[in-house]
Length: 103
Image 1 (tube, helix red, strand yellow):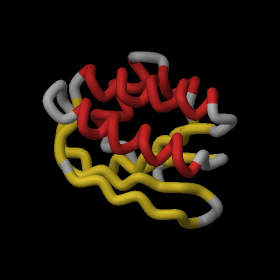
Image 2 (cartoon, rainbow, N blue to C red):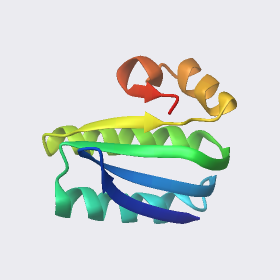
Image 3 (cartoon, rainbow, N blue to C red):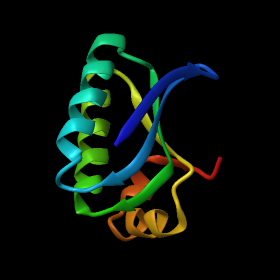
Image 4 (tube, rainbow, N blue to C red):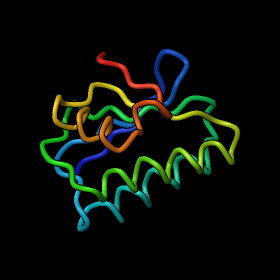
């Protein structure tokens, strides 16, 4: 799993590449949490355009980062989810809770 975090357009954006499963979720969570706690961004976006696979660990990852950001006074956005990821997030009811953008 590759993670690239950049600050652009008044928000921190984490670009994820690869798969989100129970094996990779712990590493992703650790890296994202470290950044969020240190930088305390007002808006933190996860760009999922480079995700080739996501299981239920991805849902937990997203919900946990959303809670952490709320505790730090920030907000989570999801960018560029693949169609199947968008469907999974809708089925889980996460799309209503979080801002999801196609681009």
